[in-house]
Amino acid sequence: MCSFLHLTDDACPSSCICARESGKVSCRDGDDTGVPGNIPEWTSTMILSGRNISTLQRGAFMTNGTELEMMILSLSYNGIQTIEAYAFLGLPRLHQLDLSHNQLESISDRAFHGLPELRSLYLNCSIFPQATAQLANALSTQSLRNLHRLELAGNRLKSIPLTRLDIYNLHTLVLTNNSIETIGMGNVTNLYKQRRLRLYLSLNPFRCNCELGTFYYWLKNSSQCPDAGRLLCSEPEAKRGDPVENLQVEDCTKENLEAVSYVLLGIVLALIGVVFLMVLYLNRRGIKRWLNNIREACRDQMEVYHYRYEQDSDPRLANVAV
Image 1 (tube, rainbow, N blue to C red):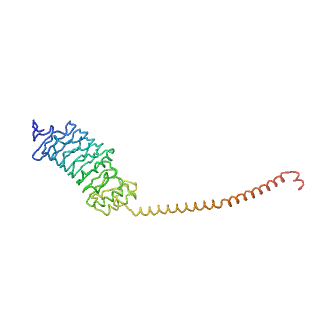
Image 2 (tube, helix red, strand yellow; image 1 turned 90 degrees about the horizontal axis):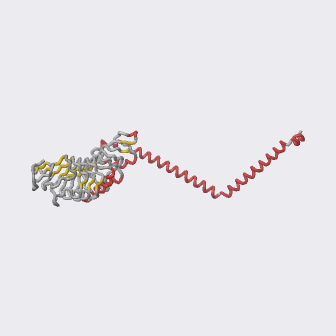
Image 3 (tube, rainbow, N blue to C red; image 1 turned 90 degrees about the vertical axis):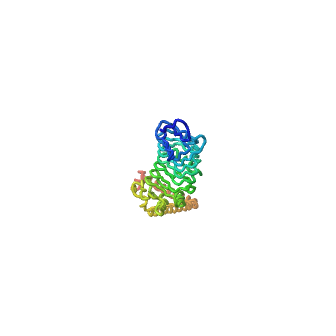
């Protein structure tokens, strides 16, 4: 703790360690439930961790309504659950923001507004499932148009939480150790457009079926995935542990051809059935007449058998025959 007893330009927040020479303010551990007040205006780097900050409120880093020169802000391990709109107001020069290892359940669509110079955003092991959709909206803001690096590792994400990759100036997107099973065609198309983007995807449970074909071709023909050799199949069981790069997409072509063949066979059989039913319908009167004739013939024959049976069963007729 610094030894300042009164608030001046050099005043250090309570339970923090300040070093004006380096512009660093470090506030680790403690019972505070909010962001320290009276952050020195000269602060360029602030590390705030080990607190119990459940909510980042609007303008949490505004000091008496003045903007700070802060460029690096670390807020990891604070148990943050909610980020309100304009929470980082007053930090227009912030270049790096670390929100890793928190418990984010609610993220406002305007959570990152007011950060036009932000270059790196770290959200590793922080996003709860209920906040995934909100994260996608928050990352769509034009305030992040200069974002170069985005890390979202360890968040159980099932897809890329960016609606439009092409509106970003991203150079690096880290999605390792999530729950991504496949990469859709739309995202692959955007990846082709973003040639400078580097996408990290290892430690995801990829489902290696034919739906992964488009992504597979991108992986083989592009150098945008530096950890491509570490991408492994999780399903089906027969391919578990196999590198995604070793997939035989030709098998999918054969499967598709077989599927097309079965479909065509089904169509032909259906047409034959329709023709057969039409023939029956058009000849219904002749068929009915034919069935009646058969029925009459059968009835006449049965009458003959019945008559013979009566003769054979009459004993008087039997004696006459003898």
